[in-house]
Image (cartoon, rainbow over the protein chains, first blue to last red):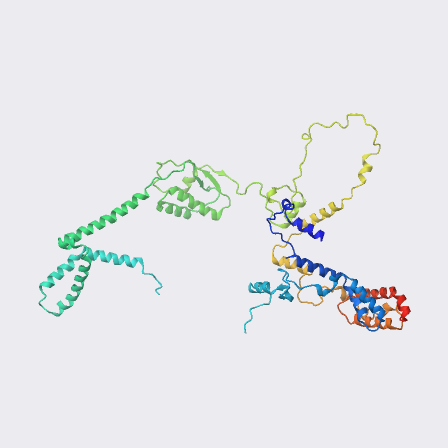
Length: 129
Length: 391
C-alpha cells in the first residue's frame, strides 16, 4: 500500500509533490480506488487458491472423519477474507462501474454502448429486426 | 420556393429599359398625339394600335407624375438633356474610379532577387524561349520580371539546382525595354552565384539501419536531429590544449605504494545496474516502437496477447502437446509411497485422483502439486488419524 502511494506521488511532477495544490490530472492504470482494491483482492484469491481448494474438499467430503473436517473448517476461517473469490467484483475496465457491466467485454453498459456506436467493437451492430 | 433569387442582371436590364423609356417619351407622345386627332375614325388598324398607345400613355403618366416639369417643357429636348446628364454622370464615375487606381505606391529600395537559371546548365529550348518572349510582351506588368518568373517556373520542372542572382535596385524612372528581349542576351551579361540547396548540418538518415549505425558508431550530429538516444559528441583532446602539466613525475616518490598499477587494474568494479542499462540501451538502439497498427498487432501476437490465425483453442499450451495423456490420467503412482492401502484416506485420495484425471485444465505439475499438498496435510495429521483409526 505504501509502495502504491509512493508510486502515485511519483506521477505528480516533482515541483508539486510537496504542495497541496495539484494542477495536473494524474493518469494511471486505475480509474479509482475501488478498482485498486478489487485488483488486490484478486491477487489474494490467486495466492490462496490452491490451499483453499484443498481445504474445501477436505471440508465438504463425507468420507474422512469429522475431526478432519472441523480442522479444515477452522483453517479456512483463518485464511484472509480477500482470498475468497466472491469478494471480487466485475468492474468496468475504464470507468470502474460496479453494476451494469457487459461481462465478456469488461465494460460498463454506458461505455460499451458508446464504443459500439463508434464502431469500435468487432462484430457488434445495431439490432434491427 | 424559387431556387434562384431574382437576378441582379435582370433587374439592371429592367432598369435600363426603364431609363430608356423615360428618356424617350417623345416617341410615344407624338404617336398618341397623332392618334388623338384621328380618334373619331374606328378602323381595325387604329383599334389595334390604340390600345398599345393607350397603355404606353398610362405608363408615361405614372412615371411622369414625379417629374411634371419635364412634361410641361419641350419633351424631346428635355429627354435628350436628361440622357446626356446621365451619361455624363456615368463617365464621371468611371473617371473617379480610374483616378483612384493611380495612387503612388512605395518602391522597394532593396535589390530584387530574381531566380534566374543560367543557360549553361540546361537548355530551355527555342520554342519555350519564344513562347516566354511572347507572353512577356503581351503582359502588362514588368516584362523582365514576368519573363524571369516564367523561366524560373519552367526551370523548376527540370533542373534541381537553383541559382540566385542579385539584381541592382530598380530605379523609379526606369522604363522597361520596348522590344522583346532575347533570353540569351538577358542572361549572358548576368553574374551567377551558386547556393547549395541543402542546408548545412542537416543529417537526415533515410533508413533505420543507417540510423542505428550512426548511433553505434557515435557519429556526431546536431542535437536537434538526434533520435531516441542522445550521445554527446566525443571530445578529442590535443596535446596542446591540455595546458601546463601537473608535475607528477618531478618530485621524489615516497615509496608508499610499492605494487605496480597493473595488479590493481584486474579488479573491475561490479556495476550490475550499469551493465543492465547498457544492455538495455543496445536493445533499444535496435528495436523501435511500432510505427503502425500492423506492427503493433504483430508485436502483440508474438507476445501471446492476440489470437493467431487459424484459431487454435490450445494456443499457449504448446508444451502440453509433448506431455503424454497417461501422465494426466494414471496418478495413483503418486500415492504409492505415503498413502495407506485401505481406509477413508485411501478412499478420499482415490477420488481426488479420479477428479484430477478428468480435469483438462491443470498441467501435470499442478496435479502433482495438489496431491503433494494433501500428503503434507495428512502427514501433519497422522496423530489424530491414528487415534481415530483412519491411518
